[in-house]
Length: 368
Ligand SMILES: NC(=O)c1ccc[n+]([C@@H]2O[C@H](COP(=O)([O-])OP(=O)(O)OC[C@H]3O[C@@H](n4cnc5c(N)ncnc54)[C@H](O)[C@@H]3O)[C@@H](O)[C@H]2O)c1
Ligand SMILES: [Zn+2]
Image (cartoon, rainbow, N blue to C red; front, side):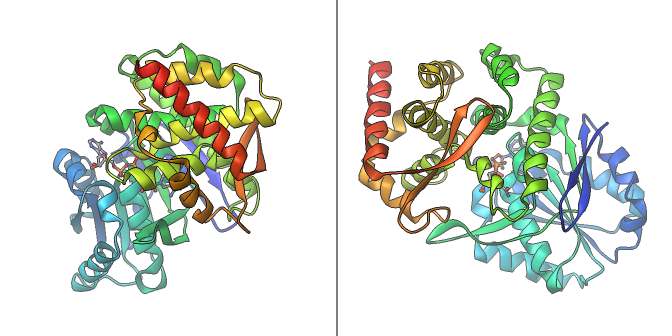
């Protein structure tokens, strides 16, 4: 079992990672678990159907069987005010108190919801993250929790760190292909903002289905270390934490206009990263040709870009300017000076338009 320590101002905690590590990792927290009056797992329904016993059985063994499971709708559809309220109702009906403990069992969506429930139930109770997607290497670390508002994604939330993260790589084997692509986009993002050699290695990967468990564990571990380093320096996103938003400004606009559920988060971020690399070539010292090489590689890996052809720049711009990271009507973009060297820049509407046109041309040429 591999351990990575996450240091924040508010808390220090460990990510325990490996195949079939839940029992071993849980036993490290036996004391805290035994002192809880109730243990509740909030589980993504799809993940619960596939894997719930891998968590319930060892938890029962360690705590002598006081485990309750509350299933929530799969994926993004759980991040609603209604499900949030239902979770609270469940906890109250089960006589949970400030001495109760929660487990999040699912991808980033279930983790975000459960974290927010934990941060608000009786003003805050401890919770553990058991991420079950590749993408959740990103979301389970760093303490951002949230649900969605009809006017925007993640608009209601808090910063609230878990007690620990148990990352069992064996749970990832049931992920559908589009979710593998989604999670790997965030891995690639972590590589792009941190390390040229790692990016070179990732260019060697031609097909995600050839990734071994140990490849995957290595990449997830590296990604968590990148995120942990950034979060350590800027827990509340006043400065360098925004570099983690590389690819996300245009990506969120795509996700938002196409509609959540039609494209995964990471697939939208991949489009946003190509766009940000194109802007970088124009406005920073990023080597010319890198964005094109990256775009062609993304196509080879199965990422699709056709979605952007259905949206006008005006539609995307409207969303980008409303993004909570935008301020005073300017578009703030994270760009790369070179691989591993992110910077934040203000982009004019016209510069953004030019790149949107160019990317759409690339996409049209490749789909002929
Ligand atoms: N808090 C943060 O810092 C942060 C960072 C990045 C993303 N996020 C959030 O994470 C969410 C996206 O999370 P995600 O990409 O992990 O996906 P997800 O939680 O939306 O799950 C995607 C789909 O995969 C299914 N699934 C999950 N694990 C599975 C498994 N092991 N086998 C089979 N199916 C499985 C789910 O049921 C769902 O249908 C978004 O809401 C995003 O806002 C948060
Ligand atoms: Zn993301």
